Image (cartoon, rainbow, N blue to C red; front, side, top):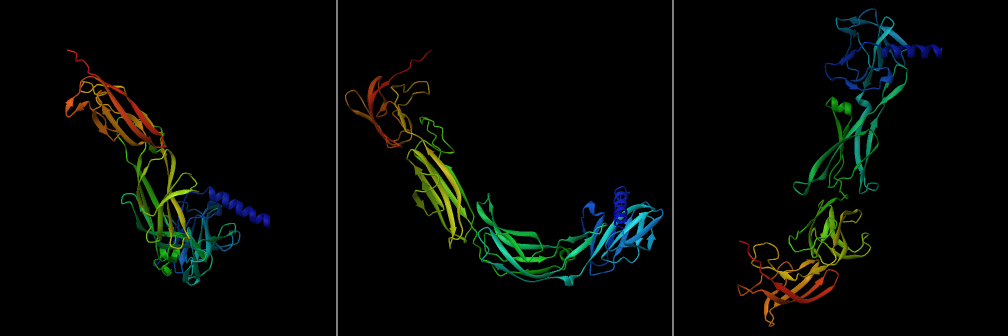
Length: 438
């Protein structure tokens, strides 16, 4: 007996796979049947869910109209009954179809198609109440507990396998989302679908919000959705954004250095900007450390924006940290590495002010990571001709607006590098003139 049953089912599946392509049409005067996609292995072309045993129309569209037989089954095609039908010019109409049955059509011994109709009873699904489980919710997720009643919706394959139709619930809430154009967190409405369950876990919002659960997808389709909503949930989740922008020194006498994204010749001046979801985030700070693990934090600035000048040679680490009022959620938003170059100071021994060339017009040092600087130029009689404190500047070879004659002049330079290195330099600088070529 079992062998005969398997043979019937096997022949049905083979013939169905070789059948002419056809379509089922299922409709109703009030609430349209809900179509569900099923795997081909089920042997079914379609599954439809109809509302509360309303009368519905079922038709099979095909051009194969010879020697037609229509069958109805409840647990498999091997246990089916022959039923009446109307033969149309473009297909076959099932007479008085009933829900919670499967239907299949044959042309002679050839199987043309199969469909299952499931009855949806609205009494078998209800949403009663909803709460947020604050004890099991955390910085990442919120756990919602539903009081609802829900019975299974099923369909039966041609082989008799009972398959469950998943109900879906829709959860709506509000959170915040970062906007790069406005550089701010802005309100965003979230609506996501979840499989029907007594407990639902959603991403923790970044602002206070209520959660509304609606369902199911069938009631939504028929525009008779049920909904329940929580009281306002006080958010604990935090999020932030952090940016850094270095002030570029465009001096032409600065010695270049290979560093990471931030750093170079001291002083390295950087503007740090921090953003976060208010009012959930209540603590925010910039931290500066000598080690990347921040085991030894040198400075803490409780500001969202920070302008800082790095003068010490070597690596520095900066991070932006945030937390909520209960310190139950803490986060390192972003970390930055600043590499301050080793100091260097070089002095030329000749310059050519007033020449046609653009090079060596001014007597000035080549430097890197000099944080303190002072220089003087004297003539051979010891008279001070020029004094300056910015290594980017220099002597243009004049005194009281007049160009000094060619010859040797004397300089004194006192400076300090980023690593604390002291520079005490003295020497001659030769002022030359270039000859013009006619």
